[in-house]
Image 1: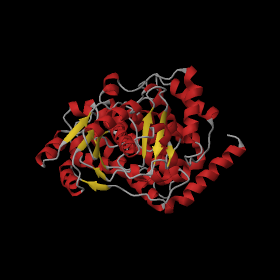
Image 2: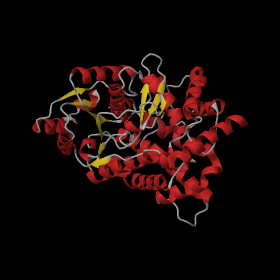
Image 3: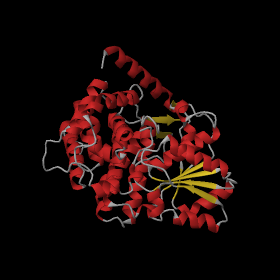
Length: 428
């Protein structure tokens, strides 16, 4: 990246960091079960609920407990279940029409990051019906208070239940962009481990590594606060303690609960401190090829950490301590190496390869441009890279030199509930 662009990026990021204490960030209120939602809805005097989810979630019957609770309380509801992986402007338009024609005044995003992002975008359009989503792209363009918005994550990874962002894909161009504003933060986050019990092992792993990516990128960036560092370290600790447990035994409800809390804390960390080039590259792949976001993050994370080099060794040392991989006396470089190696071994245990087979070489300049446009100047990354430098990651993702490495998600698992593991919710 040239000198003047670096100055611009760092000046922009410094301005945002200075403004952090004065911005109206808030954490959603945590609710432990979907059964508690009717009482909240009644207290808020809402008359009809729109549940936004995807077909896979509904087919598995995961919305059943919520529907039963609403019916039992005499609260009418309707459901939009056509959300796709990497939700599109068409999804939002369809769900908004249902919201308006049914006279709804409360929205519940139920599912992975895609469903929650779609719910946020519907809320934004509901209060600004004359403004397109494209015109809300970027920072602080929603302004208005949304209808009562609640999020029920069915994966422990996206963190979208905590964030001020919705990531939407244009249905025509496949360009993926983020809408970032404080009204998009859900009022309530329902961390109910029972809705995650049927999550398949591979999706459990990739969404868990999505949460890990949120925590790591938030921690190593240049715009951290005491609170975000604390949240990121706690998330890393919980993930390293629980992700193998839930992968091996999906019925372990305590580990499921811990992973949901890890995702929540990671979301709180990155919604203030942002993410980095792992997410920018992953978003470009999700927009162009519909690659599940958690899977893409898991594949990309170690290669980006290695590319940052010694600039992040001290911070990775502290993450390694939280993960139980090192102590205070371990040299920074050694601790950083252990942390990156642990991520690689984690991928290996979960059958996650080092390649994204969908990538076409002729697309790489366009993909790198999208990643550059998303990340710079917003993301306070430890090392600045331009589009030409980002191209290297796409070539690495095309070429896996290890013949024994799994080349990607198993076909059946990559497709299974694909919509549940797409996104994160930072715009990130």
